[in-house]
View (cartoon, rainbow, N blue to C red):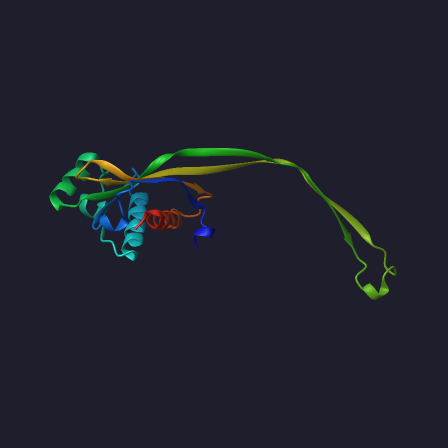
Length: 184
């Protein structure tokens, strides 16, 4: 499934002493002013983590619909005793423009019956596609796992999403890729 995804992890780093199973439980934070996108990303990560046997809680469920801040996340982590938080945020956009060259193709049509080859005349059709400029927009997201008790980042990754089909699909694809990339 990941091979069909339009989301790809481009860079990752993991602290040598950190392992995925340690972040049980974990708070999932989608840093977005768009509440819908935040919920979709958080739900995608919660589901992907739970598939690996890790208890995950969406910040939306415990902090509410206000934009999560360092203070609100820290207050929840302090109160709950949780040690790890995984956060995804917008890291920028990338626009690439590519010139697609002109294409000229000649097709031969007929004869329709090989046994009557030459009975009906063959026709040639030339089709021309002019050159054009193709523009692709990519969204860069950064995902980090932090150890709240030490204040250190223990995992970080950047992803690039091409051809945004649906934020739900992209959120779920990103979540599965990140969770699978964090070493056990």
